[in-house]
Image 1: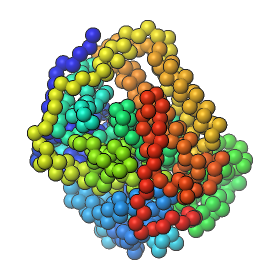
Image 2: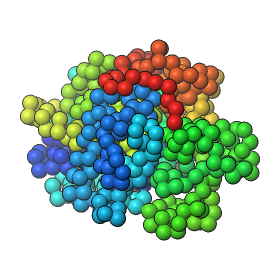
Image 3: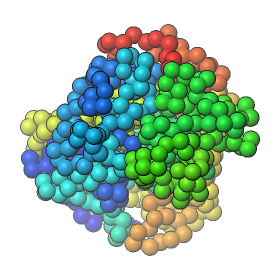
Image 4: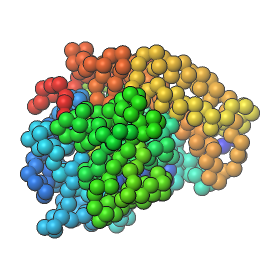
Length: 578
Ligand SMILES: Cc1cc2nc3c(=O)[nH]c(=O)nc-3n(C[C@H](O)[C@H](O)[C@H](O)COP(=O)(O)OP(=O)(O)OC[C@H]3O[C@@H](n4cnc5c(N)ncnc54)[C@H](O)[C@@H]3O)c2cc1C
């Protein structure tokens, strides 16, 4: 029988050491007793994989304004983004970039020595007329340098890290979160960790799909756990598929490649985006490009009649490719088997980003209903949260901005909350997770975990990805029921305490199944097409019935969908064309 070996206590715990978690930690460092928990070493968090850049209307490379940034983000979101939150984000962006630079982020420079900027999909000036250079970048390793800089600032500020500790449960009493149960991966020991304030920053859950740009740890653990505790999840039907994953691998070729002039071509060598987005072509938003690629393929214009198209960089000069796109060039050589300087890169859409997640207000407070009621002491930021600034479709390079703007705001509101409530920490809250893990370890079941995960990823990919329709979604729902039943008969073959990755993956697999079920239920509810959610049986956007956020709640063994109004302040919904 496994048991808790130790109880730990801090004023604040941050779960997740990606850019959102670390930006919040920097805000709090030095002012309180703060600890960051991460199942991977902090700088291995997925934010480090971000390639292309972070947006801000600095206007270093041509005229730009936060107002245009706001318009593009609202339009990109297919009018589902909350405009009050978007306005905060775009206006805070220039300050956030300068602040990162002052912390030590080595941004690339333009010929005047200012921070370099490049175009990205859906970012324009003059309300949609011309692509604008808005993404600040550090070659194609922007996430790497920002994450490393934030980590250094945390170390300097004395932040305590629990690295390679996996959160397996959250501890709630009377509707308030007081801490978490964590497993130390190197020993297999369990701890309860209590705090006055808890910030969730556990990233996305692209691993519900077979082909994804996401890393192995992106399994949405905290998102799944809060749902199980009775809190809602918002807009879970909106999953972003990035148009240019390396064929079969899903490894990302950043939109920066098209920002620097790359062109998508079909089997006839045609620049097919001219037909789908005649004004901004290959720099259209991701939802539109991913659908266009799959339509070209469906109409027989995939390369060699197969399931991919080409990304052509061969007309760019070697220096641009090797200097500004250094990392993705090496990925294309290594994983795609082609040299982008001389050959076209085989690409296809890959699951990339979750627009939905844990609903919060603009200050990071987790909310429990459509009225915006705060869950005391509980905060969320980053990809696991839904503020919502991305609505139905995120624009490229707006995620890193979301992380640093709302990570900082969450840190600030935790400071305020601590002033009001600093002594209140409960202990000895019961959790059933340890006995559940005991059952998993002693199970003599015959089901294979790896098969369950693969079958889940396959059916989600086949029926709930870029295109969806009712029959396919119902098929996934039925399959999930079957997988849940089979999951209760899995056996963990390795009984080791030290780095028992099989056990860890079993815990994560249950989260993936839950999150897939919520995604499908939300997709079934939304009988319209908006942003990344395209229903072939309802191909039009329907503002009359669906211009609202979805909130998915646990209802016994079922999922109940409610709605929440979208905040529209400046830009009334219009037809979306590029
Ligand atoms: C290949 C790639 C390139 C991208 N490029 C860009 C770009 O150029 N610009 C842009 O704006 N966006 C980009 N994005 C999107 C962006 O990088 C992500 O949305 C963002 O990094 C998510 O940050 P986060 O802090 O929310 O989470 P992450 O960086 O994913 O961190 C999650 C953290 O949570 C921890 N965690 C998770 N579960 C648990 C648990 N159970 N217990 C303990 N810890 C846990 C992990 O260990 C990790 O520390 C890219 C995404 C990918 C995949």
